[in-house]
Amino acid sequence: MSEDEFEVVYSYTRKQAIEDGVLVDVTEQAQETGFKVPVAITANLYHRYIEPPDGLEGEGQSTTGRLHDVLLLTFLAAKDRWDGSMVEIEPLFVMGEGPRFEKVKCWAVIGPGDSGEPVLTIMLPEDY
Image 1 (spheres, rainbow, N blue to C red):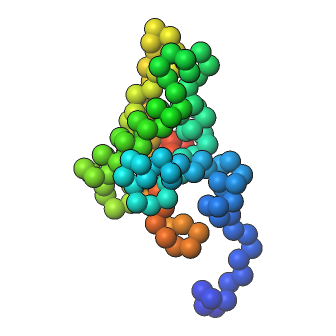
Image 2 (image 1 turned 90 degrees about the vertical axis):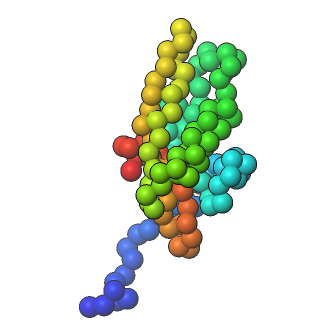
């Protein structure tokens, strides 16, 4: 039986993942940073770390600023040590008063989009 003879039982596209909220499309902000491919962040990473914890939004922390920091770190790391498929970054997030910081391991992985085009996804290791 050849590869062409297999029937696809189910597929879940990147577009569907963005529509469902599993991925957050940040392509517009990523282009401002210098990315030339579509970029998404997993909802897990976005809601746990990109969105500031309660009480910090007005204390110099914003979703826009935190997203910019992650995109910039990813862009610089990719230029410096890209292995062809992924790069690891470890942004430091303010997570509470004092301030309390948390270093978070993230992966930026490039792969095929819904039409085979290159797309980048930034995620926590457990999201892979």
